Image (cartoon, rainbow, N blue to C red; front, side):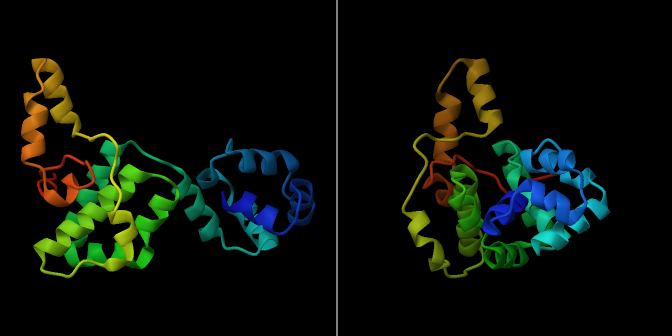
Amino acid sequence: MLINDRIEQLGMTKYRLCKESGVPQATINDICSGKADLEKCAAGTLYRIAGVLGVSIEEILESAQEEYRCSFETFKSNTCHYVKDLGDAEFMIEVLENDRIRKLYDRKWYPEAFYLLAMLDYLSRENSVPLCTKYDDIRSGTLKNPIYPAGVLLTAKVLQSEEPLRKAEESAIPEFRRFNLIESDVRNVV
């Protein structure tokens, strides 16, 4: 969390942050421990903390959002909807400008990093755009075990058969398959 990182960088204690910001010690402790939801904190509280730490309120709120990790199925769905809403080119630009792949990879959120890189590579191929070489080091990796869509896993379980898994692997988009992500349809989202 940005607040904890800044406290450490400045060689400050939570008590000192409390005194300099005028925010009660209990509130500072709740924020730093993650007990308090930053999005529900009073703007004045965040303003005073941000001022002492030399950061913006936006930076504090963005760092809190980055800490949250949704399910992988939700991440995939959100990514596909984001592509649909922005369009291929804008999505690619946004991912590259914000270096989202590297950020996810550095956090060791490998399925998400590989999925986003696979999407970037897939869209590059679909739009005849050269691959961005800045992620070649990540491209050399892969997930240890395949990740199948929830629907495929459910079908295999209901049928008590490996056949749905095999068929999903055969029809997987190559850019996803190379990372052990079994994905065959990233365009058909509602």
